[in-house]
Image 1 (cartoon, helix red, strand yellow):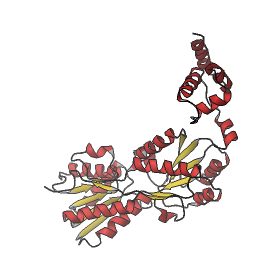
Image 2 (cartoon, one colour):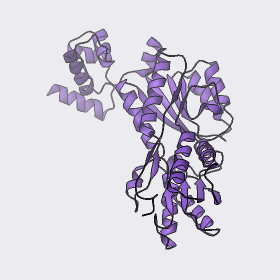
Image 3 (spheres, helix red, strand yellow):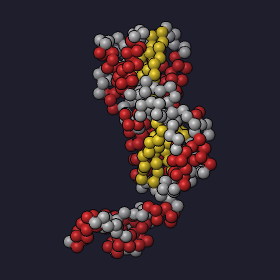
Image 4 (cartoon, helix red, strand yellow):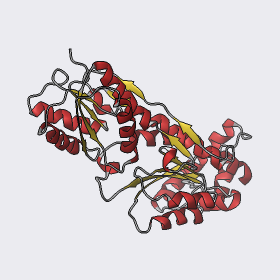
Length: 353
């Protein structure tokens, strides 16, 4: 009864109990309480549960600053998504990063780390100051960076020079010495081209993402390289911004020139827009025009017909990014260079009956 009253008082008055009070309530030493709350393997599970219950009852919040000063670690990382003012903010307007973040969270949560999600523009004049704060404030142990656009990578040099743990999601050819997880966009473009060749399509439209977006650049490079020997009789290319509306507008532009046999869209959102345009124009998919997307988002199975696409394994990528970053933080590895192979997901939108 007294414990319930004390807990109510703590919550209502925003009182933060101390570790000593938690230890006293649990009947253990302060050192044991600290080890238990930090999931130390030497502490019995029954003791850990008892201490955790007492900490919760007393509204105890660990002092992260104090812990950082004590062991040099904050047990926190950041995930930074980088946008561009020149294009639509696809971080907020699409779910492109959702699955990747789910993967990151699943790993760092088990390691008892917290995650801070930041969004910064490549064109932000204070961008380098952000990285200087990340390094200097010691509130983070490492950072996962999703740069998205091909820009100046001065911030990577800063992180590297200060030996601050980081991992980039994107092909290393943009920064060939950096810690990277390559999501295989070049190979993904090749996979789509191989599918179109196998189906015998010769009149093709390509609706890609922004010209300076790393994913778009790599998918286009792989797609065109693999398509070179396909005997294409007609080919047009348009650029969108990875949103549904841009896919719709690009498809209208293509139809103003000719009706292709097949359309490869640089992501599933643009494919959904292209599909909507074709339907509104009285053109059947896949009987008249085939459509292939990229990413394998949930919306693929909600479209009619269901969308053939490339699975880039975004959740797997997130898990790998987190695992590699934690390995860098714990000095288990000195550098990161990993590759994830995308796979084709064949549904109903690509093959004429």
